[in-house]
Structures are given as structure tokens and as C-alpha cells.
Image (cartoon, rainbow, N blue to C red; front, top):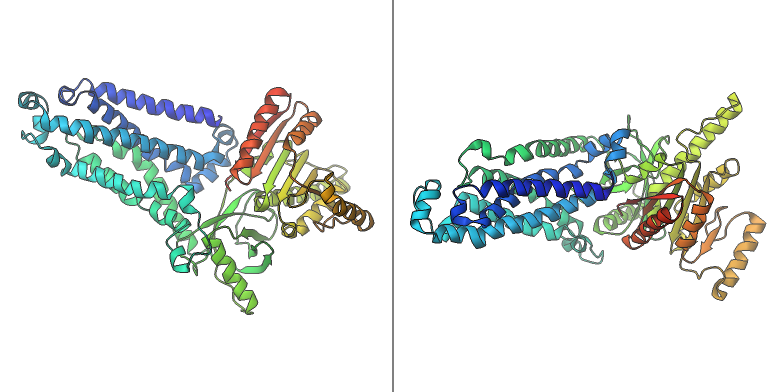
Length: 531
């Protein structure tokens, strides 16, 4: 199913639940007092029950990783967009709160307190102890007070989960950084623990519903809450035993930290997966995701971390200090994972395009290593048995690495050399490096460096920019021309396009995928990694 179909199904369910409750309450005695305000509030309440249950499922990482390994489910459910769907559901909850809470406060409660006494006695008096309450008496009930408390907590948590509050300048004082940036999002999101507790309280004290069977909130949320709680408990227990030995630390230009870690016993991962890392010296509660840059068959784990936020800046500083001062012991590191990501789906395609901007190259490094390892094994099998197996190896893989800083190419020099060596025997992978800080080839301002680059590579077989046999191009890629060329080269093929980087280029690539899939016989399927 496509994302559009999933959203359509979700909207259909929400609409059906709203309509069901709207009609149901339009035929109840309380309708004579509150009218369609009551029906609207109750319809919105039913969608809130559903969405408060559903919103937990996309963030059950272990469950999603397990389900992703099922080929049947993985081909039907777009697990790659779990976080985006989580955000969409959050938007649905906001709308539900406005409809439910707004109609109660602005319409239902004034009508209850101001209704004709005879009508009140004949309809809903029994629900209020046969005493018609004032507006403020209604506000003081357990049901309303718990509802208002939930709204207040959500009004704090929702805005702090948006993009702007999560971004933070490393120049802020350390004491300020502890309560801003990602920390703000992390700690404020835990306000939903009391929100769910209040939701149960709220649902048990409904003054228009005495029958316990009709108090269905717990039926909606029981399984998702238990599932999510189980995952959090499992991760908490597992994290206590997940300290890993640091085998090697490298600091690269551009403030990139590379960690080579001991591979825990029984740890198995697929190319494209990621892990969560915790450094208790910074915070015992913060876990941050990083793509694995090691191959599945490597006997170690590796990650490359660029200092983009408060936590990564502190981590870089800790290891930098340890190296500069000659400390024998590095800060402790704990890991959790591995978890599935969209890059895993590269095995679905015979033709793969990978686009990484800057540090966005990391999800694809493990894929390149995996391909290189499998090609070597295939060559060995072919030499020994006269035949080789290219199972799960793409027929063709294209990597486009776009970066502004020349020093970025130092991050994965060994990997690029390995790919270049492998391609001499099996030309499966084509790598295109782009350096955007230099004017593109053909521009007079870059003519000199282009000549020097060509002469150096002709003489030594090494690109003077990337220090690998892989040629570096200058300027930004012309994506239209690239897609046009690949569409002609692979007519009738189904190509997986995988991207990791800022949203601006993601939109452009997605539009090009749609355009060329429509106008040519080649189908481009777009996948975006969360950046």
C-alpha cells in the first residue's frame, strides 16, 4: 500500500467512528438538551480513543523491525514512514481535541446549566444527581478537570515536539543546553505518561454514561499501551547490559566522530540498519539513532557522528578531550538495536540509486560494504566451483554523494577504494562524488583545478580531491539529466531511489521520480531516510 492509501484508510476509519457516534448520540435523550454539539463532541471523542491507541504503534521500534522482516507485510505496509504517520496521527488528535473539548466547553456545558428545568428533569437529571449544575460546577467534576489537565499537558508537549524547539545552537551554555534542544523534546514527550493515566480516569467518570460496557477507552488503548510499555521496559533492561568496548576512535575534519565498537555476541544486522547510542556521562536517559557504517559480516560495529546538535557536540568534545589529553579510558558507550530503516528495502530492487548529502552518506556505506563483500564471495565461488551466486546483489547500484567540504571524502576513503577495486572485476557499483564548493566543470573559474585534477589522475590513478580512484565532479548534480539518462539506460526497469539528506532535495527527487515514472517506461520508487 502507498502512503496515500494508508492515510486514506486511516481517514476512512476516523470518519466512520465519528459518524457512528454522531448518529448514536443524535437519538439519545441528552440530545434534547445539547443538540448537535453533543453528537459532535462524542464523535470526536471516538476518533480520539482510536488515535490515542494508534499513535503508539509507529514508535514501537522492536515490533516494527520484526514486522519489517516479514516480506509479505513489508510489501504492503510502508514501515519506512512510521514517524511521519506518527506525526499525522498527532495532527488528528489535535483536531479531535479541538472538536471534543471545544464543543463541550463552548456549547454543551452552557446548555446543561442553562437548559429549561423541566426538559433537564425529563432527560439527563439522573446523571447529575437530579441537581441542575452551574457551568463552574461542571468544570469542577472529575471528568472535566481530568480532560482540562490532559489538554494542558498536550499543549506543552505538542509544540516542543516540532522541529524548531528541537534544534539548538552548540554555543549555548552547558546549563542551558541540558533543558533545551533534543532534551526539551525528550522530557516533554514523557508528559504523555500522565496523559494516558488521566485518559483512563477521564473515561471512567463520564456523567452521561453509567454502563461500564460503553466506557470503551481502555479497550482501545490497552494493547498499544502494554506493547509500548513492554518495549520501553525491554530496552531499559537491555541497555543495562549493552555497554560496548570502544576499539578505535577517529576525529575527522568537519567535526565528525567515528567510533569502531566491539560487536556484541549474537548481534546480527542487515545493511541499512541503525542503532541507538547512549553516553551516560552526558545523560543516562538520552538515546540517539545513528546508521551503522559497517557491513553485516564485519566483526565490529561502526558509526560516524557529525556534530549537528547539543548531544553530538558534547560527545565529540568528550572524545576529543580524551584523545588530546592522552586518557587511556574513553567515555562509556551503550547501544540499543539494531533497528530497521528504509535503506533495507534496497534488496527489493535490481537497480538501486542512493543519494546522500554530506553525512547523509552513512546509511549507504554499509550497503556498499555488503555489496563488495558479496561480490568477493561470488568471485571466489565462481573460481572454485565454476559458478557464482549473485543472490541479493543488485544488478546495478548508483551512489551520488554530494558534499560541500572536500574533507568529507576522508570519512570513507577505505570503503571507496574497496568499491573501486571491486569494480575492476564486477562493474556493479558506480560512485559519483560531487563537491559543491567548487564551480561546476565547464565554468572558467574552475578550469585550472579541473586540469590539475585530470593530470593527477592520469599520472597516479588517484583523484586529487577524494584521494581515491573515484573521480570527483564539481558543482551540483543536474538531477533531471541524471534521471533522464538512467531512464533511457534501464528501460522498463523498476528502480529504487534512496535518499538521506535535507527535505528540500527530497521534494525535488520525489517529484522527478513521479515525473519519469509517468512519462517513461522506467518506474522510480522513492524512499527517504529520516535525517
